[in-house]
Each structure stands twice: as structure tokens, then as C-alpha cells.
Amino acid sequence: MQKDSLLQLLRAKDTVFTTNEVALLWGETDARLVRKRLYRYVKSGKLYPLRRGIYARIKDYDKYELATKIYTPAYISYETVLAKAGVIFQFYSQVFVASYLTREIIVDKQTYSFRKIKDSILTNPAGIESKDGYSIATPERALLDIIYHNKDYHFDHLGNIEWDSVLTILPIYGGNKRMEQLVNKYQKATQKGIM
Image 1 (cartoon, rainbow, N blue to C red):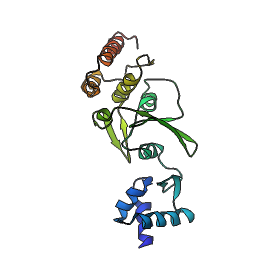
Image 2 (cartoon, rainbow, N blue to C red):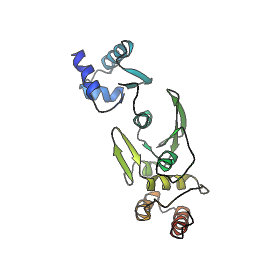
Image 3 (cartoon, helix red, strand yellow):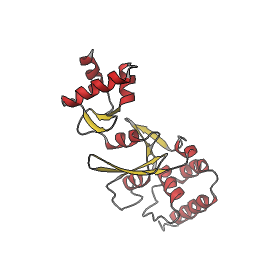
């Protein structure tokens, strides 16, 4: 049974697991037994401990997957998404995550910056894509997340933003007039070729 348990983990598509996810995968209700078995796999070098209750099956695990499992619910957003989309040119080594609290955590020499966002926004799936083992904001949703937190943010290039998508997602922020004005300003600037 134990060998089958390890094989289940090693064959899974996820690279990072929480203790609760492992218990569900194994169909095990005894949390103590799950922790004991995981401890043995870590001691034998078959799993890698990342943080209390979080393990990786390979050393080259997906950092985005880990980021969304430290605190849940959560999704990758903000500068991480916008830099990848070419909306901002500044390089950030940390991974930015929308969550229900604000924290900065270092795991395995990687910094994860969690920013608190209202629960009604956090749990709304508009503009959120599901990838292998994690959720990530579209550039349009990440843009709105930053505008929600910061009224004076500098964006380098908004030419790739789909404004129809921005306007579709905008209502989840609760009719925020300041955000609506900023979105309108950025959209007009983009249409004029300023940004």
C-alpha cells in the first residue's frame, strides 16, 4: 500500500502537494497516518518539504503552483502577470499573489508577496485562468487588481490589453468610481497611442 501511495504522488500532474490534497488522493481519513507516511518519504529523499504541510515531488517544482497553495484561495496576479504580458518593463524576482491576507514569505530562496484583496473579488472567476495546478489572472484582470490597490501606478505599454475584457471584468470591483475613471483614462491614452 505504501509503495502504491508514493506512486500515486509521483504520477500526479501536480508538482506541489498539501497534506490535505495527499489525504484526498490516497483516500485516507487518518491525518496522523498521512503525515507519518509523508515524513518517511521526506526522510528517504522521495519528497521535498517546502513549508509546513506542503511538499514537492520534484526539486524543480512549479513556483506558481506553490504560491497558490501557501494560502488559499489565491491566484497569481499583479506585476508577475503584467511583466510577463509586457505591460510593465520592470523586473521583479518575487511572485505576486492575490489572496485573503497580506504577507511576504520566502520559501526555498524565492519571495512570494501576497496582497489582500476583498473576498468578493478574490473568489470571482472573471479573468482567472486555470493552469496546471494553479490559477492565474489574465493581463486584464491583473491590470484591474493593480488599479484596485494603487491609483498612481505607472504602466509602460498597454497596447496588448483587450479593453472589452477589462470593461467586462470591471464590475466585480463593486462599482468603484475611481477605478472606472482610471480605466477610462488608460483606455483613451492607449487609443491615442500614448501608452
